[in-house]
Length: 178
Image (cartoon, rainbow, N blue to C red; front, side, top):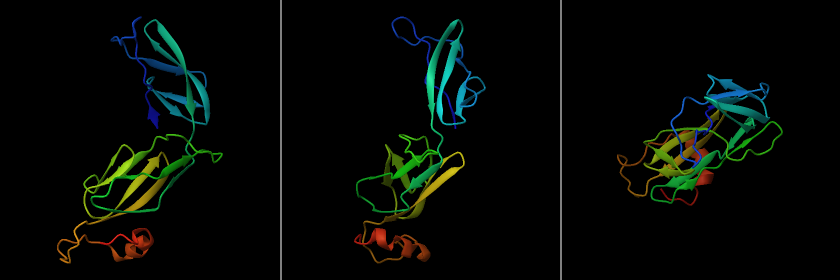
């Protein structure tokens, strides 16, 4: 992933001042790549010095890179409309199998079905869907079932559920009427 650093030019009081673009450079090309002079992309695990330059000002920061080798997500989640939001259950691991704290992952989901807010799954309507997690070539998915709070027998108001998925969700939805 390409990431701009959260960098600003500040005056003596610490106030942000308008400045030209802050350019990046590094001597650790084996760990990080600088793209278009304004974004950092990790190539390998490690710590790399990155020099920031704007006009006559320069500063060097250390950038820690941990390449995601594997993403693991909870395979199935069953929720009921009206329940409190459920936390996302996903983890990322580096090449040595170590856990990566606060990994940068792109989350993909149908925003009319569920929303992800502050790391929690908030159901919006009943049915089946999924949450995809990705970082470069690494991917994982959580299959999600949201049960309706209304216990009505009308087929017009029941969510359409693919029967092949029913068997997968039976263990995780057990005890949740609907």
